[in-house]
Length: 216
Image (cartoon, rainbow, N blue to C red; front, side):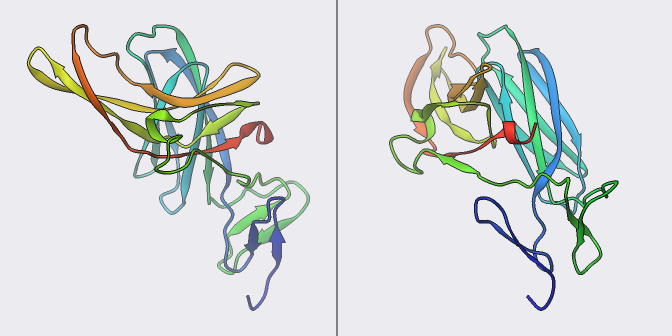
């Protein structure tokens, strides 16, 4: 660093104003429905984008980015007809809006990267051990408080139904009941009746999560 400021977050993360742009909260987005809910969120194509999701049910999340749109999909298991609410906390490297008063910091290109109102993404927790017995389809934990996760695939179940191959995806849910959050793998679709299900294809993936009560 030839000039600027060195700022350290509570978890020890360092931001050098000449070289670093913090990933910070762009906004909180919600939607409700049964079966399937899709959130369409505007973003800047030049920004890094990272969504963290939770729901009031065993809901599987996925997301995609196309141009200036982030699409976050929330799928309930096909056997679950209860209404649910999904909430997505979107973090980006967008230029920060200027506060009415306080502190503002710009990078060397003139982009405002940090103000006294910026909610910087910190304290990301890794749940599970990649490739271990507590990953992928076998990952299951309950945490006190309100936690959201980055959408991730847990694996697949493959089998045969009416002499045709079938494949059922499983993803991770963050099911918040008002006091605790259950984080585990969930099937997107129930296997058809009388289907023959073979050995699962386990991705052995982990989950990245944050305590979103810090951002509400």
